[in-house]
Length: 66
Length: 374
Image 1 (cartoon, one colour):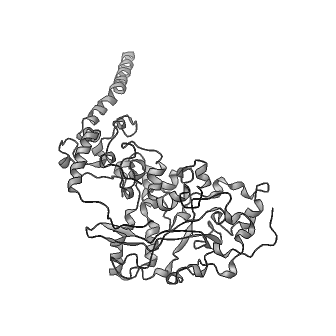
Image 2 (cartoon, each protein chain N blue to C red):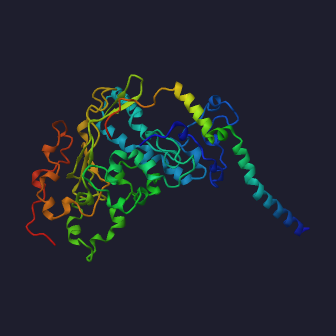
């Protein structure tokens, strides 16, 4: 009986190690943030859309060094 | 530095999921927003671009608790020297001080760092953007992070990009910033310092060159004679960039601007304005700081009414040291050579009072030597 308990614990630990990470990764990869921010095509489209409406972020009057 | 294209700035490398330390942290856990919303406009509601500034506790603190504890007092985050220097020069009037504070917030205090702006993205001052697809960089890359901010002076000195100068000998030995400026120094040690020269774990030439005073060492006589009299840079630095007359304001679109006069290359030895047990030398290198009595006039007149409280020529450690320089080629290349010293005639009339403590009186210039060691 005692031996069986150790075997079960070993099997569960292995399952966690083998399956645990891919499960978490899967959840991570499913988010909209990840889907969009890993797609250059989508980001180009969105940043072009933003650029049409957003004014310049830096003043053209800046001059000199330092 | 050429900014990244807008989409490049926010492109995430999918390899991040393989990062054993950070790969399991979902985006929204640090940045907020709604990870399930397919509409990018509404999904970004409440998103925090840099969740590590000014407080990194929720983003980094759980794991990097010791660094996080000291982080707010790191000079790269606290910017305490800016505050102390401006306070010393500021008009004591409360209304004026308040307006000066607004100006500082809009300009000077924008130039800070954070965990994210060293280890994940380029600093905001160069328009940000991920260093490598949001992959965490244990050691920040020198030219995308360190010299992105420290570009006008340190980078040009270190790489020998100023006309007529050579790269630092340390550059030629392929040393990067972190060889001298360790992570411990950058992260802070929990103490509040008034300037970088006080930082206890900051770099010192003697950390590596401790043998220079040994009897058998090359040039031991020169090193022993000048110990505590002249800083290492007095003999080993090359000409470096000086700036002046910084003026700040906002343009017609409300965007902050910074204007300064053309920078110039110079080399000036002056009296040590920060003489201490740790920095006992009488003579040091001085650099003209990018400040002016009228820097904040756009916001409020006479903001720096106590301008003369501090010198405008400040202690400097140019990052372009060489073993052999024109001034150390012989004793008399420096001794008696007035052109190397900051004399009263070198300082603008309006700044003479401020710099009286660092100007070298003619009588203090070391006299020419009749005997010279081989």
